[in-house]
Amino acid sequence: MSVLRPLDKLPVLNTATILLVGTDDGLLQQLANSMLQEDCASELKVHLAKSLPLPSNVSRPRIDLIMFVVNLHSKYSLQNVEESLRHVDTTFFLGKVGFLATGDHSHEGGGYSRWLLCSWAGQPLQRPSEHRREAGPHLPEPPALL
Image 1 (cartoon, rainbow, N blue to C red):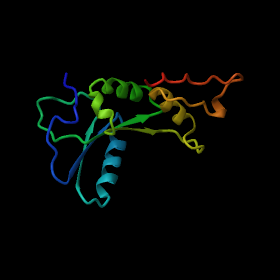
Image 2: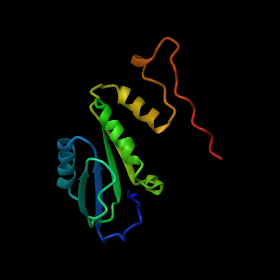
Image 3: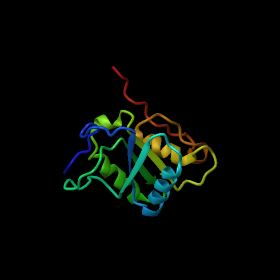
């Protein structure tokens, strides 16, 4: 089982490599194509993966950014991302990991999807009003930093 580390390989001059991880191949391919069509001062490489860990017997470039794509209508998609996170070194989370939520069609600034992802990430955020019960449970405060 290989863990992805941000400094495993030396960087390549004027090249950025993005790894998109998610269960929806069509969406990942569409996102990759959109990214590659943008004008960029550097060369952009996009790799796709259904899940982590990546095969260890394959030669691959240094990965500069990992973007996890979560479909909010698929429990499997969320479980896949949670399992994949176990194969990413913690130092990657210092600005080299992102999450993209798909499948929420509410027009209220993210609505339930924003609440779901923030609660999943451990950030304090109140539930949106349309999902609030009478007493309105709130997410717990994160532990204080020392």
